[in-house]
Length: 593
Image (cartoon, rainbow, N blue to C red; front, side):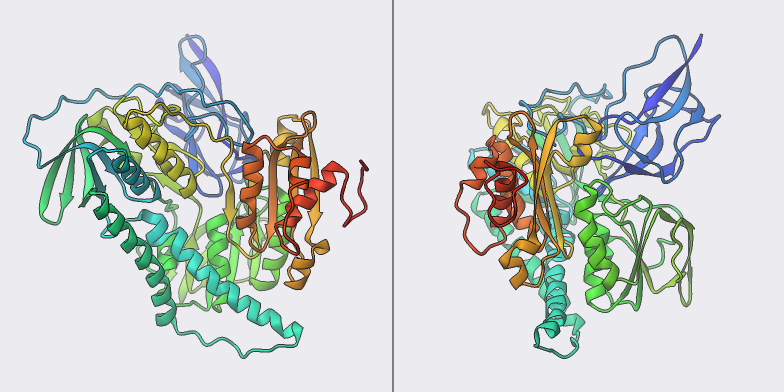
């Protein structure tokens, strides 16, 4: 007997109103268990909502561009048998949501895994106590921490330099270029202060050399640290071939590594949306954009999340006319709207256009540029661009490592579920970083890495962090951590919010950057800090105090009574606390104590 089940958006971590960017099925389609039904896009990752059982799609309840959150009805599926199957596991929901203070994580039972063959019995070229697959921030941290704890470690990395995407083609080179963009913008702004500079003269080779030099210093330093710790590094592509064996395709041929334990830190890659001429070099992902092949006269950025907006800031400062299109109703869909507003107001003056609720329907490479057809509420006037950057998130590499040969359970989206000790379903194999789920952030990966290494070394540890901060290094920067106002509203949480406007900050006024503000979010009963957000210059440097306050269970008075130096931007956090506490003197308090 057939029955109809409802498919809803599962727990997707600290993300809300996430847009649907792709419909993978249509009514009448037959789907298998774990097959993706729709694709969602958060700030830094994409994820699919899977079918929890095989059946036929009766009805889709969402359409392209819809904003969905946990619990949103996605589809109705007719399945054989009576009774609904359990809710599907979420991409990356391997621990309780980290947005709000919570007790230690509860272990997750990973999905069933394929049964792997026994160890091959072939002679190993390399043997070690711990194998680490991937040398990004998570991978090299895990390798170094494990080595410090006495383990014999082999670190496998496919690229010539350690550091992974973050150091080589992500966080670090982008921040080097964003610094350049910031200096250009500040020089322009000085004209209003009576100091004028000539227009910038761009030497692209020198700028590219500066960026590469920054990367080289860090990656070279990692190589030295690995050598000092006696971590053996194998360069090549690693694939599991058995529960205790990995083959590495090196320049000298295949090397078989036999290990007692392993940590998978294989990361993620940029999502390449269909419908774009990816064989044309003028269509770029974030890695291509950071290569700075040239500065196009016109650039279309598809995706108004963190990565897309950071690169928009860079190329606009370097002289490109940048147009941004975003499918959702606001930039950075996972962020509180009030934090995004000052950024959008500033960008609207520096970019050629920002178009929300808009998508690219088709793109074609022609001799004169990339011809684009748009659909949505705000159609750009320009439809031919010298270059197009597609920045709509990243997908994990779980299906690219031969995981089934080691019996590692990988879900339909490519994520590996782990417990509170970062163990996969295979007890001697751990997983960390992007490959275990959102948020896909380097600082999350490094904390997971230390935890996994310590557990592998025999220490009793588990995930204890309450919150993970997020930062957009745009101009102005946006940073947030913990419970957001949007989340509190959706979950009916009783909160109080205190905002201190930077228009009342002497430091911000002296910098002529008073568009920002600092806000703290408090539990209405305990008056403890449970969240916060900052928009303004150096917001990413300031948010750590809010994260620490949450971890320490601080109340408003704890922050407000901590003496902050004056005049600084950091004191805006203290003043937000004073607003909550009722002791603010730099503004008229809404309450008095």
